[in-house]
Length: 178
Figure (cartoon, rainbow, N blue to C red):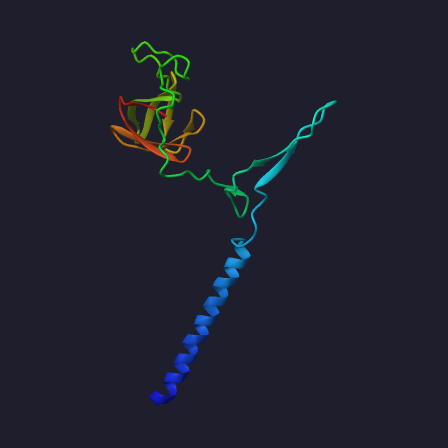
């Protein structure tokens, strides 16, 4: 009995392996991994003026395009240092800095200032007073305020909010920059 099952089992395993190899090959071919990438160089031709010579130069374009039209960042040599002796130093005039005075006045954060001023219970419903850029909002759970901010939950001393897809938590009296 076992002598007749072994060849059938071996045949079934071999058939499954062939089907798997065929499916994998099909996925590689149809995904575009083996397809040619777009042109990596384009020719720039200068318009000739009277008495000028026509010049053609090849401008190399980064070939960091993946199948499907997505572009990734340019590859970087991991052995080339990010900061060299020729790199500009922040704060020095003429090198891109502002020529600071050392007082720390150069930091100008961009964003919204959010303060959770208070949370109160009004007949079993939690309400919060939230200040965004100086404007006060009286909000409850599930409400959207100041554009993209939403209240997720409120307790006696803290609240959970979202800004777009990012969740954050504030305690009463806490202020953050978002």
